[in-house]
Image: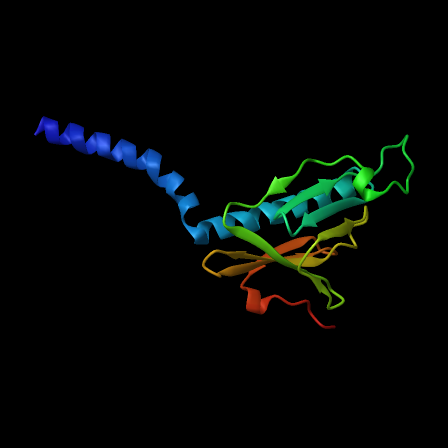
Length: 165
């Protein structure tokens, strides 16, 4: 009986260590993780713009499935310094198997390739956009950022649209 208890305890410990790591193996959870990562970084960049001041940029590279936060020019730099010449937080990637498929803009435009720069001004009034992510099973999720109120919403792709006032 004691041997059975020891075996069950050991299996329980192994399951508690292995089970959380299995989430990354599921395409559904990798898709959600990628959406949360992008949403958290958008919120962080917006709060920096309002708190520290200056125009932050979220730069998406759709061909590489990466994004980065670009800092405003330093005080000793030209205020009109090109975005590609500014300091960045570093390049971040979405989880394996996840693709940044499209960036949608409030004016109805969208981009499906290349590098897309989204400006977040210090007042928090610019930068609304929707990021569409897909996984290898063609599931998708939209990350909707509303700049004025600073909200991030996660929704199915077919519900992803800007409100028409």
